[in-house]
Image (cartoon, rainbow, N blue to C red; front, side, top):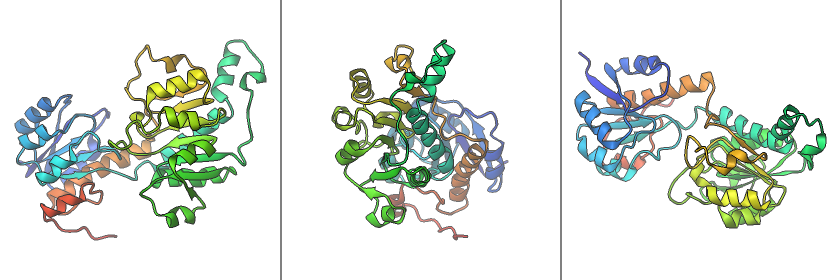
Length: 335
């Protein structure tokens, strides 16, 4: 009989072998579930006598946390922790962990792929040819990349990686992030500006801000009106950072040239969403994070967060650092 039980609240992976392998190192058993509501999470966790949760989309609300007094840790697949009530976790001494570095290349590559596809009108031209129209003028106007300006909304690890890739194509990079020191941006030749200036100057706006209350809908009517008519917006972060109705209005009014979206306010996209009928919009199914390598890394690191806590250590990817006031664990040695 295992020492610990860990509930996976929900998942969409074909195998959980990497998680099981990691958890076995601390004598923990992974209990599978497919919860969609807080009540389902509570019932499954109680039945499993779970001391840890691995979470994908199921809501880990205050009610969930307060209903599970033996809960020690919640580890979420991915960078965002918007499924988890952080304040409740802090109050009840529950460690919250994420994985911040598993897909830096994948997401930055995908964002740049969307950018260059928009810039070169690759999707529009492809569709025109398939519809029997062999005419380069379908893509007019197209501009050279060198000298164009990329504005990054958020300047964490992923957009910093994207900045270097874009600069290799001769693109000037500016960024908006009130939490990043100017010297960090200066090291990679990126200028920090406010959001309004970024919108006014950029030929491409790429969104990388996390979804928190302060960033929900931060790109809205005012920002779109400030953008160039030739500008494109790219989003590989979280859909609700962009006010989707404002985006639709801007596209319909010709205020911007188009969009490359890997994420939307509502996923999967609804059949009546106007974005589906717009030739100047590229839509992907929240796939930017994915490669075979990144998926395996994500799964192992998510499980390792739980294994660390059950082994008596703060996890490498501790998100709610304020919890240290209520939870005394050992610090892991940095290798």
